[in-house]
Image (cartoon, rainbow, N blue to C red; front, top):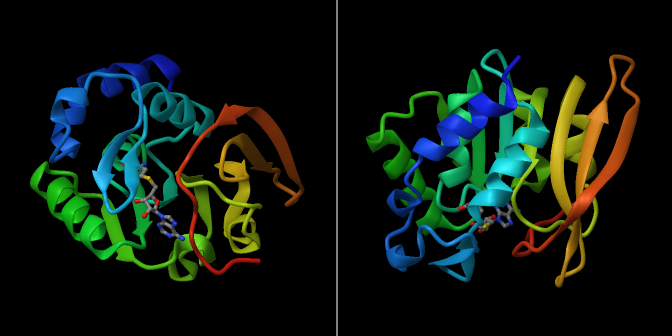
Length: 192
Ligand code: SAH
Protein backbone atom coordinates (compact mmCIF):
# COMPACT_ATOMS: atom_id res chain seq x y z
CA UNK A 1 0.00 0.00 0.00
CA UNK A 2 1.26 3.48 -0.84
CA UNK A 3 1.93 5.62 2.24
CA UNK A 4 0.87 9.25 2.46
CA UNK A 5 4.47 10.40 2.89
CA UNK A 6 5.51 8.61 -0.34
CA UNK A 7 2.84 10.53 -2.21
CA UNK A 8 3.93 13.78 -0.53
CA UNK A 9 7.60 13.17 -1.33
CA UNK A 10 6.95 12.55 -5.03
CA UNK A 11 4.50 15.46 -5.15
CA UNK A 12 7.28 17.72 -3.78
CA UNK A 13 9.52 16.77 -6.71
CA UNK A 14 6.88 17.83 -9.28
CA UNK A 15 7.60 21.25 -10.77
CA UNK A 16 4.16 22.76 -11.35
CA UNK A 17 5.55 25.33 -13.82
CA UNK A 18 6.23 22.46 -16.27
CA UNK A 19 2.47 21.97 -16.53
CA UNK A 20 1.79 25.61 -17.36
CA UNK A 21 2.63 27.55 -20.49
CA UNK A 22 1.62 30.95 -19.16
CA UNK A 23 1.28 32.52 -15.69
CA UNK A 24 4.41 30.52 -14.76
CA UNK A 25 5.30 33.08 -12.09
CA UNK A 26 2.23 31.74 -10.23
CA UNK A 27 3.51 28.15 -10.20
CA UNK A 28 4.54 28.19 -6.55
CA UNK A 29 1.42 29.94 -5.29
CA UNK A 30 -1.08 27.62 -3.62
CA UNK A 31 -4.08 28.67 -5.69
CA UNK A 32 -5.75 27.60 -8.94
CA UNK A 33 -4.18 29.30 -11.97
CA UNK A 34 -5.75 29.83 -15.44
CA UNK A 35 -4.43 27.48 -18.17
CA UNK A 36 -6.59 28.87 -20.99
CA UNK A 37 -9.93 27.79 -22.47
CA UNK A 38 -11.66 28.93 -19.25
CA UNK A 39 -9.94 26.18 -17.23
CA UNK A 40 -7.53 26.16 -14.30
CA UNK A 41 -4.70 24.05 -12.94
CA UNK A 42 -5.78 23.08 -9.40
CA UNK A 43 -4.01 24.37 -6.32
CA UNK A 44 -1.15 22.09 -5.24
CA UNK A 45 -2.43 21.44 -1.71
CA UNK A 46 -5.74 20.17 -3.10
CA UNK A 47 -4.05 17.92 -5.68
CA UNK A 48 -2.06 16.35 -2.85
CA UNK A 49 -5.10 16.04 -0.56
CA UNK A 50 -7.29 14.46 -3.23
CA UNK A 51 -4.54 12.00 -4.20
CA UNK A 52 -4.03 10.98 -0.58
CA UNK A 53 -7.80 10.50 -0.14
CA UNK A 54 -7.86 8.36 -3.28
CA UNK A 55 -5.14 6.05 -1.89
CA UNK A 56 -3.75 5.01 -5.30
CA UNK A 57 -1.35 2.11 -5.58
CA UNK A 58 1.17 0.71 -8.08
CA UNK A 59 -1.02 -2.32 -8.82
CA UNK A 60 -4.11 -0.32 -9.63
CA UNK A 61 -6.04 0.97 -12.60
CA UNK A 62 -7.04 4.62 -12.20
CA UNK A 63 -9.56 6.68 -14.16
CA UNK A 64 -9.23 10.48 -14.16
CA UNK A 65 -11.91 12.81 -15.55
CA UNK A 66 -10.55 16.28 -16.46
CA UNK A 67 -6.91 15.94 -17.57
CA UNK A 68 -6.52 19.73 -17.77
CA UNK A 69 -2.80 20.51 -17.51
CA UNK A 70 -1.81 16.93 -16.67
CA UNK A 71 -0.43 17.95 -13.26
CA UNK A 72 -2.72 15.63 -11.28
CA UNK A 73 -2.25 12.96 -13.98
CA UNK A 74 1.52 12.92 -13.39
CA UNK A 75 1.06 12.25 -9.69
CA UNK A 76 -1.47 9.48 -10.40
CA UNK A 77 0.86 7.92 -12.98
CA UNK A 78 3.60 7.46 -10.38
CA UNK A 79 1.24 5.61 -8.03
CA UNK A 80 -0.87 3.54 -10.45
CA UNK A 81 -0.33 0.59 -12.76
CA UNK A 82 -2.22 2.42 -15.50
CA UNK A 83 -3.98 5.76 -15.70
CA UNK A 84 -6.87 6.40 -18.08
CA UNK A 85 -7.48 10.12 -18.38
CA UNK A 86 -10.22 11.95 -20.27
CA UNK A 87 -10.35 15.62 -21.30
CA UNK A 88 -13.15 17.25 -23.31
CA UNK A 89 -11.23 20.28 -24.63
CA UNK A 90 -9.17 19.25 -27.71
CA UNK A 91 -6.35 21.77 -27.15
CA UNK A 92 -5.83 20.71 -23.52
CA UNK A 93 -6.03 17.04 -24.45
CA UNK A 94 -3.28 17.32 -27.07
CA UNK A 95 -1.08 19.61 -24.96
CA UNK A 96 -1.19 17.38 -21.89
CA UNK A 97 -0.73 14.19 -23.90
CA UNK A 98 2.37 15.61 -25.60
CA UNK A 99 3.67 17.08 -22.35
CA UNK A 100 3.38 13.90 -20.28
CA UNK A 101 4.75 11.70 -23.08
CA UNK A 102 7.76 14.03 -23.40
CA UNK A 103 8.26 13.93 -19.63
CA UNK A 104 8.50 10.14 -19.85
CA UNK A 105 5.20 9.07 -18.27
CA UNK A 106 4.48 5.80 -20.03
CA UNK A 107 1.47 4.25 -18.28
CA UNK A 108 -1.09 6.90 -19.23
CA UNK A 109 -3.84 6.48 -21.85
CA UNK A 110 -5.41 9.72 -23.04
CA UNK A 111 -8.84 10.24 -24.55
CA UNK A 112 -10.61 13.34 -25.83
CA UNK A 113 -14.26 12.96 -24.88
CA UNK A 114 -16.97 13.71 -22.36
CA UNK A 115 -15.69 11.70 -19.40
CA UNK A 116 -18.96 11.61 -17.49
CA UNK A 117 -19.75 8.27 -19.15
CA UNK A 118 -16.42 6.89 -17.90
CA UNK A 119 -14.35 4.62 -20.17
CA UNK A 120 -16.39 1.37 -20.49
CA UNK A 121 -13.77 -0.50 -22.57
CA UNK A 122 -11.30 -0.44 -19.66
CA UNK A 123 -13.75 -0.64 -16.73
CA UNK A 124 -13.84 -1.49 -13.91
CA UNK A 125 -11.40 0.90 -12.23
CA UNK A 126 -9.88 0.53 -8.76
CA UNK A 127 -9.70 4.28 -8.42
CA UNK A 128 -11.67 7.14 -10.03
CA UNK A 129 -10.92 10.84 -9.60
CA UNK A 130 -12.96 13.69 -11.03
CA UNK A 131 -11.25 17.09 -11.11
CA UNK A 132 -14.24 19.20 -12.21
CA UNK A 133 -17.41 20.06 -10.32
CA UNK A 134 -20.27 17.61 -10.87
CA UNK A 135 -23.92 18.46 -10.04
CA UNK A 136 -24.29 14.89 -8.76
CA UNK A 137 -22.32 11.66 -9.03
CA UNK A 138 -22.60 10.33 -12.61
CA UNK A 139 -24.09 6.83 -12.34
CA UNK A 140 -21.72 5.46 -15.02
CA UNK A 141 -18.75 6.29 -12.79
CA UNK A 142 -20.22 4.48 -9.77
CA UNK A 143 -20.94 1.47 -12.03
CA UNK A 144 -17.38 1.47 -13.34
CA UNK A 145 -15.86 1.45 -9.85
CA UNK A 146 -14.44 -1.95 -8.78
CA UNK A 147 -15.46 -3.72 -5.59
CA UNK A 148 -13.18 -2.27 -2.85
CA UNK A 149 -12.77 0.78 -5.10
CA UNK A 150 -12.52 4.44 -4.14
CA UNK A 151 -13.69 7.54 -6.00
CA UNK A 152 -12.99 11.20 -5.16
CA UNK A 153 -15.35 13.73 -6.74
CA UNK A 154 -16.42 17.33 -6.05
CA UNK A 155 -20.22 17.57 -6.10
CA UNK A 156 -22.35 20.70 -5.80
CA UNK A 157 -23.28 23.99 -7.44
CA UNK A 158 -21.12 26.47 -9.34
CA UNK A 159 -19.79 28.36 -6.28
CA UNK A 160 -18.65 25.53 -4.06
CA UNK A 161 -18.82 21.76 -3.88
CA UNK A 162 -18.56 19.01 -1.31
CA UNK A 163 -15.47 16.91 -1.84
CA UNK A 164 -16.97 13.41 -1.73
CA UNK A 165 -15.16 10.17 -1.06
CA UNK A 166 -17.19 7.29 -2.52
CA UNK A 167 -16.20 3.78 -1.50
CA UNK A 168 -17.57 0.50 -2.77
CA UNK A 169 -17.14 -2.59 -0.59
CA UNK A 170 -16.53 -6.14 -1.82
CA UNK A 171 -20.29 -6.74 -1.99
CA UNK A 172 -20.78 -3.67 -4.15
CA UNK A 173 -22.34 -1.52 -1.44
CA UNK A 174 -21.55 2.17 -1.90
CA UNK A 175 -20.89 4.65 0.91
CA UNK A 176 -20.34 8.40 0.41
CA UNK A 177 -18.53 10.66 2.89
CA UNK A 178 -18.10 14.45 2.71
CA UNK A 179 -14.44 15.38 3.18
CA UNK A 180 -14.79 19.15 3.04
CA UNK A 181 -15.56 21.99 0.65
CA UNK A 182 -13.81 22.90 -2.60
CA UNK A 183 -14.27 25.01 -5.70
CA UNK A 184 -13.73 23.58 -9.19
CA UNK A 185 -14.65 24.57 -12.74
CA UNK A 186 -17.81 22.73 -13.89
CA UNK A 187 -17.93 19.19 -15.21
CA UNK A 188 -19.62 19.68 -18.57
CA UNK A 189 -21.30 16.64 -20.02
CA UNK A 190 -24.37 14.51 -20.50
CA UNK A 191 -24.83 12.49 -17.42
CA UNK A 192 -27.50 10.88 -15.31
N1 SAH B 1 -6.49 18.25 -12.60
C1 SAH B 1 -6.50 19.28 -13.61
C2 SAH B 1 -7.78 20.08 -13.47
C3 SAH B 1 -8.12 20.86 -14.66
S1 SAH B 1 -9.63 21.79 -14.54
C4 SAH B 1 -5.28 20.19 -13.44
O1 SAH B 1 -4.85 20.36 -12.29
O2 SAH B 1 -4.78 20.72 -14.41
C5 SAH B 1 -10.84 20.59 -14.99
C6 SAH B 1 -10.74 20.01 -16.37
O3 SAH B 1 -11.88 19.18 -16.56
C7 SAH B 1 -10.77 21.04 -17.49
O4 SAH B 1 -9.65 20.86 -18.30
C8 SAH B 1 -12.07 20.73 -18.24
O5 SAH B 1 -12.00 20.95 -19.62
C9 SAH B 1 -12.26 19.27 -17.93
N2 SAH B 1 -13.63 18.76 -18.06
C10 SAH B 1 -14.79 19.35 -17.71
N3 SAH B 1 -15.84 18.56 -17.98
C11 SAH B 1 -15.33 17.41 -18.52
C12 SAH B 1 -15.90 16.19 -19.00
N4 SAH B 1 -17.21 15.98 -18.99
N5 SAH B 1 -15.07 15.24 -19.47
C13 SAH B 1 -13.72 15.43 -19.49
N6 SAH B 1 -13.13 16.56 -19.07
C14 SAH B 1 -13.91 17.53 -18.57
